[in-house]
Length: 287
Image (cartoon, rainbow, N blue to C red; front, side, top):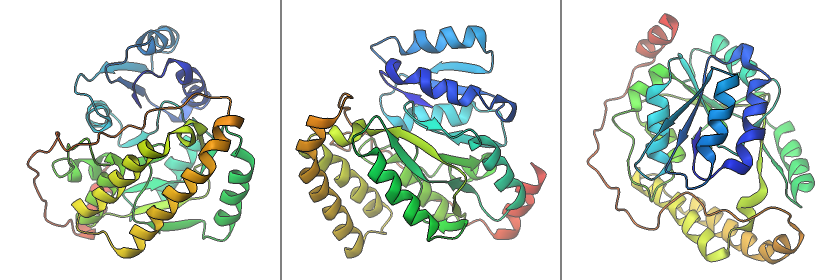
């Protein structure tokens, strides 16, 4: 769980995870240079629950915090959420059940709902409607970092390929790195979470940078196309239209979205050859 100035949301996030700790070996919170009492909140929990671990990553950026957490994790299955994510009561169990049954998938995600937002109810209805029209298990090209789980063997296969650029979306980048090495991501209906609606309060200009970072990530992998461009433009327009009313109706505070506007973090990247299905199933079975 990457965390930057998240003292207001960490409690609800940790409580939801601790309620199902029979299925969770450890909970790793990565403090990414917080200026508030994020570390203090985690420390108070860890004194009561030893499975909660606090580590620090001084390099600013979600990608650095994520990598530090993934590398520190001990389990063969690694979950990834944001500090404002509230997982459903059967979240961890549904992940473990899926990976036990489906050795052909490397990672998994699920439906995402909103809380503390004036649009929580209509957005939830939309998610329910769209989810019912899909199969129980559906292959997807990318997954959001606020509701994600991956096999450790898959992370190790993609680890040297992921970009360290902070102007890219690290979750999309990892998803496309998995795709590049021949590993698949599934969306399952039972892996549900809620996230804060504070992202909807982001000013349109700042949100534009966030959307451009999404497009930039697909370009980075040579996978951008006109359909994606139209979809992202529509997203920016919709956000701009509802933003004034959201500001009036919302009771939460805005949040600076976690991507930079430059590519200062560009580093050389190693490209791996594809992993054959047989090789991956053997590795997953060994876990």
